[in-house]
Length: 439
Picture 1 (cartoon, one colour):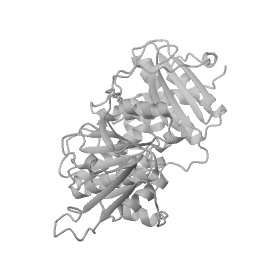
Picture 2: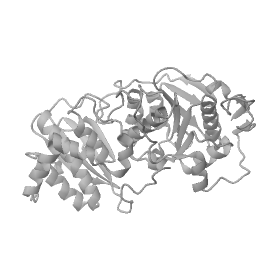
Picture 3: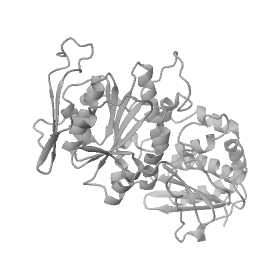
C-alpha cells in the first residue's frame, strides 16, 4: 500500500529520536502537565528554596463548595458521620481539630460499630501506605472518608479527595466543617491517564511538604473504571503504585464501589493492594501480589495480522500509523500526539529491540490502537515511563509516550515483545490546557 512517505517524516523521526528532541518535548509540555513535573523525579533531594504548587485540578474544599452545587440537607442512609463541636472550640489547642468528639457509624447487616478502630492508629511511619477502600453506597463512602480526613486534620496533615461528583458532595456534607488543608478534585479530570495521575499525586504531596506538612493523605477513585475504560492499564497502575509512591509520606485509600464494579475487577483490586478496608474492618489482603509478581501481559492481535506492516525505520512506522489514524477519523490534535508517542516507541524498537519490527494499527469502538513489536527482550522495568527518569539521558522516550497517549501497555504480542498505544476518539473534547487552573 502507498504510505505517502515524504521528507518531513525523516526529519520528524530524527528530531523525535534524538536526545535533543526529547529535551525539547520535555521543555514544552502541554499546559496541564506543566505544574505536575516541576520536580524532575520522585526521589530527587529537596532543597529549602524549592516550592511546588498543588496540581491544577485540586481546589480547597471551601472553594470547591462555592463552585459546585451543594448537597441538599436531609441526606439519610445506613452510614452516617457525626462530627461534634466546632474547629474553634478545641480547648485552646493549637490545632483546632484536636480533641474533637468524632463518631463514625457503619451499618453492616444488623450490626453497627464505631469506625474509629480503622483510622485510630495514625500512620506515621516512613514512606507510602496504599490501601483499597471497598464500599457499597455513597453514604458509606462519605462516612469512611470523612473519618479518614478528620483524623488527618487532627494530626496537622493535609488531604486530597478525588472521586465522582456525587461522592464529593456527600463527603463535603459529612465533613461538616471546612478546612484549607482539604482539597477536592473530580475523578474524571484527575484520572485521565496513569502516567499523568502519578505526576499529580507526586506534585500534590511535594507541594504540601514544601508548605510544612509532615504527611499527606489521599482518597482516590478511578472513575473511568466505572465505564470500563482502559481497565487493564488502570489495574496495572494500581499495582505499580506500591513502588512509585514508596518514597513519599503519603497514605492513600483507593476507593471501589463493589455494587457497581464486577466481582472480577474487585478480585484484581485485592491483588494490587496490600491492605483492604471492607464492611467496617481493615485487614491484610491474602491475594496481594507485589509488583513484578504478576505474569507478563498478553497483547494478542485477535485476527488482525492481515493489517500488520513491517516498517524499515521510524519514519515508515509513523507514516503507516498516520494513514490509519486519519482513516479512522482521529482528530488532528490527537494524530499529532499519537505520532509523537509512536516515534519514541518505534525508535526504542529499532535501536534496542531485535529485528524485524512490526506495527499494527486499528480502530476499536471509541479507541484507536497501535501496537509495535520487535524480537527483543522487552521492557523489564514495570514502572518505566511513569515518572521522569532519574538516570540522565535514558528513559525519556517511554515517559513522553505515556504522556501523549491515553494508554500505553507493555507485554508480549504475536511477534515478540510489544508496546500497545491507545488513543480515545474525543473530537468534542476541549483542547488540553483548558481545565481549571486550580480545582
